[in-house]
Image (cartoon, each protein chain N blue to C red):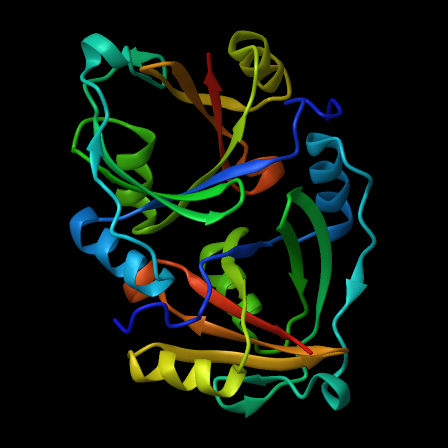
Length: 151
Length: 151
């Protein structure tokens, strides 16, 4: 394993797949004593340019974020039925943790470095001000890893 | 759901079950650019007073901690074969995220409050300077929750 391959050791999000984000957003907020978070929907494919396992995908997800530390968020994710790493894992394993996320710089180089380590690029996409990539790091790190690059 | 039931919203650990902690400790350390963490073993039952689903258990685990944020650690966990929530989940679901942890005060009251919400107390134990409890919060929060109380 190449050392410090992402250039950071900071985990910034824990992504959790849920079936009913409206309900889960309320339950998590109550449990944590936080305001109920706003629910947003990821952009459609014309803006997100989402790709899943190499092919364009129309997949979108509803997201809600809760602050659970100075630089840590829980991200609740309710995917639609189009092909995505979210839908694949929700169907296969049910609700629960989907990924841990890191903020990085240099998405192309970083994802290439991870692929050289034998990790599979699962899904990529864009959002206003940045881009993401999900990497299957389960062989080495036992979890899916998300890279987030904000401009 | 009672609001702010733990009195905190801060997630302090992400617990990850692994089969080979010596190997995983090295891989995680390299990936994150951190020193390889020391591996410790939880106390035996005479000190840990561990209980699993109501009964005393001799279960122990090897643990390693990696700092991945200002107040966040990854906790790698390799359990032995005695009955525990670690062994149960590793056998049932394989390697991966086992729990998220919160630091709390007032263990007895907090676990009683969670049980009143219909959550199951899975495992409890003690360590030098504190105690822990694992709660099955999967119905509401989609993950197991660990409470940590340090004196």
